[in-house]
Image (cartoon, rainbow, N blue to C red; front, top):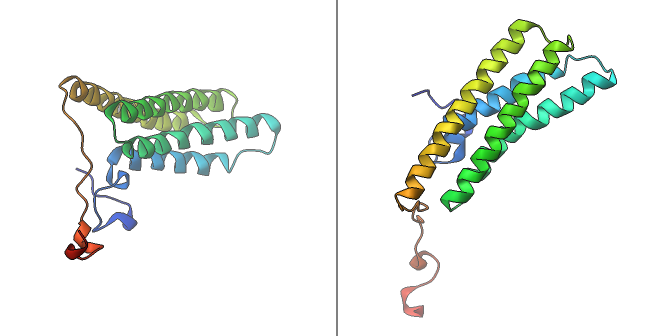
Length: 156
């Protein structure tokens, strides 16, 4: 497994920031941001830039939001939205190359990242569907605090 590259999550409890899927989505968005920062200021390039940044950033945002949902269907729904955004990003990458704003090598590298995210999202969605069908429940971690941490036992 890849070592967590997010320094703020070292020695912390489990969170969406520890998910390889979220980290890869963030990496893709960061690469895209760097590329669109170099685009000309003409209207067509700026429309593509806004759209591709929005769609790519939606992937990580929906992975994080889905992770924060308590029910399997809600979590799965956000992963489905993230998958759609990854597909949209891939479409914008094609247009970026066709319009002459990115070369084939850049488009292929980012396409591979999108494809990997799409496959990872598909696998996770299917895993959640199987889990839901088996009627298992996902539970949040128990709180590290108890009622006694907030009030003395004699108050009960």
